[in-house]
Image (cartoon, rainbow, N blue to C red; front, side, top):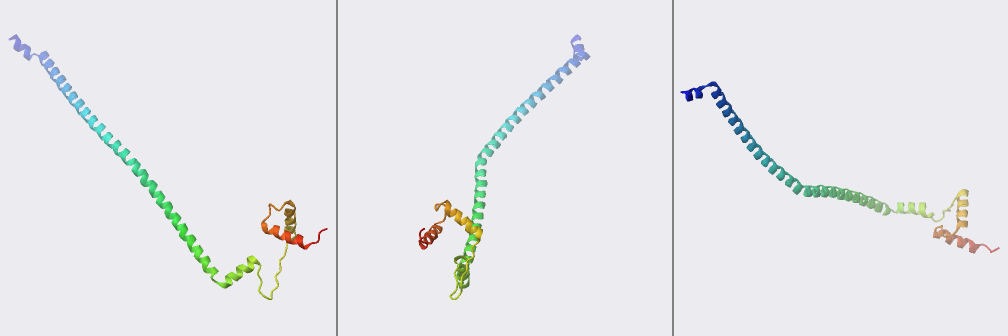
Length: 159
């Protein structure tokens, strides 16, 4: 009977309860560790897949963005070319008008109509500057200035 009493004693029951609790805690910890290791494995696999996707998509995305900026730049260039073409067409239309041609010839080439007298006013300061430039040398001047100087020198008697 001592064995039965030992089985029902408080100390024995507490010891068995402690052993069962410890076993239960150990099993639950082991399950959590297994679950954690499984979760960690899944997380690692998911991270690997995500990294692979990022690396695989990075270059095409960069190319896409680069090509979109190139397309936008080409469209801006095409718009500028269209605008310039319109300006040239307008200028061509102006040059088709004889009155515009005459106006430009009178303004830039100093043309006069028959019977008119053309006058050219020379600024004394500008003439002085031209004389100084002539003294500096013919190489720095435009070619037509050298031609006119040659004509002027041929017209004057030598001293």
